[in-house]
Image (cartoon, rainbow, N blue to C red; front, top):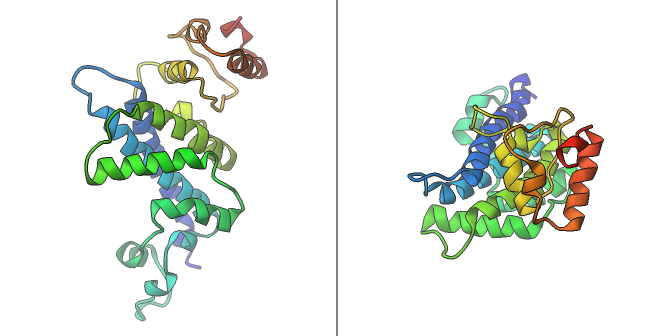
Length: 227
């Protein structure tokens, strides 16, 4: 295999992190003038999911993300290179990636139902118009934190909450949105928030979710945030 092909997983991963950064921002933040973010967050979330899944698959072998590797041979080169892949390669469609993930890694996609709901919303927004009476921000966060987050934590030791575009603070407002939605998330060992009060954000949460949060804070030595 051409050594240059080994760069593919990292290239995809870098793009995926960028898409996740936008997805988190558009799903959490809302101000006058950016109402379109409610729809854009679906597109960015789907893009991030697609790229992360391809990065995980490409870790097994870079060519596994392509539909038909036989079409990559143009009978002119001695070895397959990045330029040929860019010019001739066609990667698997978004909706097929859960099956490709399972076939190549043995891993089942978490929350397949959420994947399908977001896929349908993405298709409607991208190709026609946004479905009515749906909370797209809520759907985006569910996809990010029940599908993307556990996968990238295991595969790349990445924490989804750390990627957002508000450089003035840490992930405080992302965490606040997750707490209010009772969504579990991967918690880094150096976890800290200063702009939100976690006790206030958890005021309406179920006992089970509050217990989960408390367990995570105990694990990282930050029980003071919820006590």
